[in-house]
Image 1 (cartoon, rainbow, N blue to C red):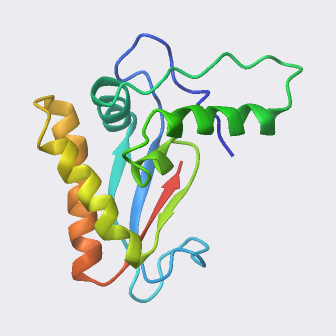
Image 2: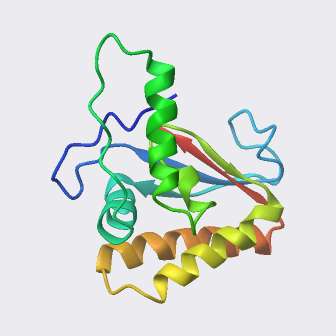
Length: 154
C-alpha cells in the first residue's frame, strides 16, 4: 500500500519508482510472474507519471504525512483527493500512486484507452505525450491479445 510518499514537491521527475506493465489474461487473480498468455510490456516511470498527472492533469500534491496519523486513513485520503481531481478520468485515477499496483480487466481497456486518447488530443507536452503513448500502446496490445493489464509497483 502506498501513499505517493516518494514524490518530492516542486520537481518534475520528482516521483521515483515505476510500474512494470504486464498484459495478463485475468488481472483479478494474477499473483506475479508470467504464465502462459501473460507478458511483460514496458515500464511506466516516475517521469511518465509526473508528466501526465502533475504537468498535464494538475493533480494535487500529496499532503504531508503526520507520524501519529493512521497510515491507512492517510492513504485513503490521498487516493480520494487524487481521484476527485480527475472526475472525467476514472480509469486513469487508478494510477494514483507508483507504489500501488493497478489492474484493468479486458472490459476496462477500451475506457482507459478513450481517456488517454482524449488527453492526447489536447496536449503538446512532450513527456506527457510519451507517457500517454505508452498507455495507448499498452491498451492496443491488450486489445490485440484480448488481455487485461496489470501494473506492478517496484
